[in-house]
Length: 130
Image 1 (tube, rainbow, N blue to C red):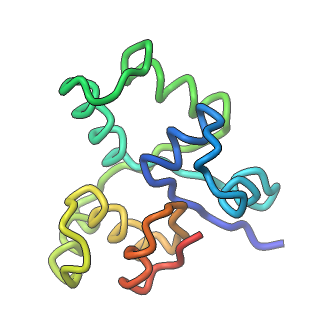
Image 2 (cartoon, rainbow, N blue to C red):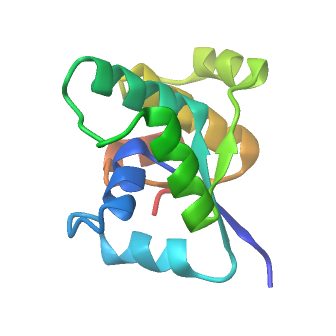
Image 3 (cartoon, rainbow, N blue to C red):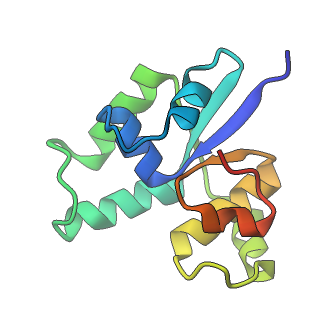
């Protein structure tokens, strides 16, 4: 069976970690499937760090500790931001203005990953969206 590679959007990661009912069943099924390898982008970690520093997000521990703990508990892997990911953003249409989401789209396209997100606009880029 072919492994499915899934890149978690920041909200999907947080909702999974907190067992939030806003996480759609289709994404829950994908994350728990034996054939799925889940990834969290360094871009999402950066976004979480900004939100914590602005007081818009409370994790109860540092972003570093939270992300490391959750990735270990859930067997999620971290996806570094590479130069080629950054350069791919240049060729994206402007369906989205959020720089973090645009980088996630570029990473998903380059790495052949599906995006776990509730943001349906991301599919407009031709990336597979759960």
